[in-house]
Length: 136
Image (cartoon, rainbow, N blue to C red; front, side, top):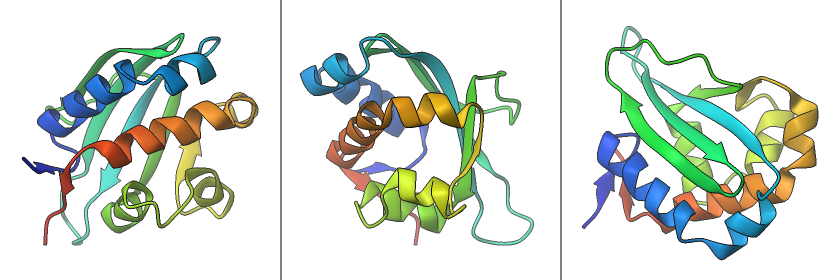
């Protein structure tokens, strides 16, 4: 069953994939951090979608869509238009390249991100394993 990207069901499915990934567990065993991902609307005047992941030593402790538009303070916030996120999930854009080219805007410690590139790449690989659909 295909899940609509950046919904609560989608992010919970991502959490399950992450928590079953031995590769992620190994690559992120020393990483501690939480993320707010912001999906900016395609249309002007639209409402951004926020989802939250708490990543801790190779596991995802919690993940959810922020429904009130008031995300928690997180170590990292990554924001991009919906079309850019779609490219990331479909493996058409490497997330680190997206950050370097400012297609994905990172708020947080870039040094920590660069030290954990392998974990970040595997996290994205986990996202590509979720059966995802995108709004038209």
